[in-house]
Image 1 (cartoon, rainbow, N blue to C red):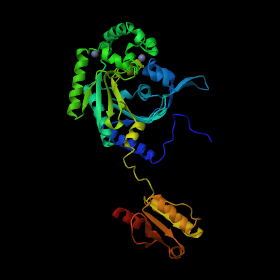
Image 2: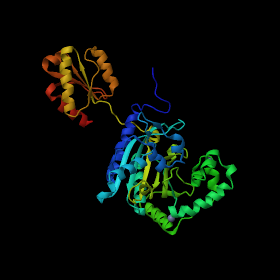
Image 3: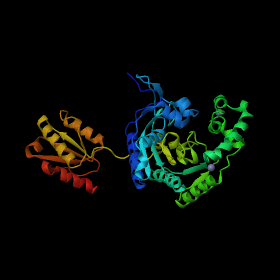
Image 4: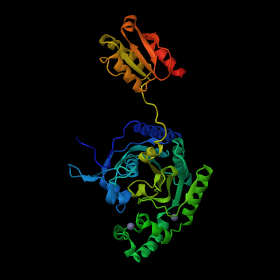
Length: 416
Ligand SMILES: [Zn+2]
Ligand SMILES: [Zn+2]
């Protein structure tokens, strides 16, 4: 017996129906906001993530499923969506159409994190990327779209944590100030931070060990006038869109490419500080990866965690509506035809085995969750009919001609 890998899992029904429901809701919301689907490969060149996500981030340093393939190429399973989306945007000149470049992506991601409740090494993410619009309206729209989706899914107690990381210009001075501050306290920092502050001092603010004390004590970023104006306009528009938010100066987000607006959505349903979704602006990323100067904003939503929140809600009923039963091998052929006719009429239908006893087939029908059993016994076979027996509610068994069965069932199902 070969088991699945640690941190990897099978998603069984009915949980799988919740994933499908989340994806369907996301597609509806994306259509409402003018987003189109962009599908990207699972495997990319490793350097894509090293150069975009950042070589000092936990994701790239510790969590990436990177390996050398049979042809000696350095590759990685995608740990997040944005780098691949941006690569595709540049590679296919998607900014040249003169339209808003709004793309969504739904797919699995890989990170070798320590497995824990709700965290898997392969997980599903829904990604939204809005490339080419530098204005605060894009920030407010992107965030309110996320809140709209979470509301549609019935996620309660959502709050948006909001911060601005400023532009490269604002960060230049801050970087120097912070580096000086951190150097003077080097012995207080954890070992990885001691190694990376010279390359990226901001990373220490995001460290799980050092972040908490640094956020209380370290010098704070001062926004330049343009970034301050962008941030206040974003807040004004969010307020106008009815989105509740909380400005959190300690929110840094663990990726290198963010600038200006960053955000996380937390839910009281999760009962911890963990975010359901998060994202931010990446105004310089597209250009730094060889594309046009295209400011952008996006977010990622973890579907596995979201499904964990929705588990107590009733799962959608995916059982077949009808269950077909036959009394003999000959009746079985008719029963098979009947199932074909029912499905052609759009009525879901299932069976067990026409070679089993009537009793055993009936037991399967009762367990199946179907609304009606359609039985072809010896009498029905001779008469060209089927007996229709309600399974969920008390009711009389009725005999219907086989040709009329789909229409009659349809009428019965609509009546309910
Ligand atoms: Zn600035
Ligand atoms: Zn640290």
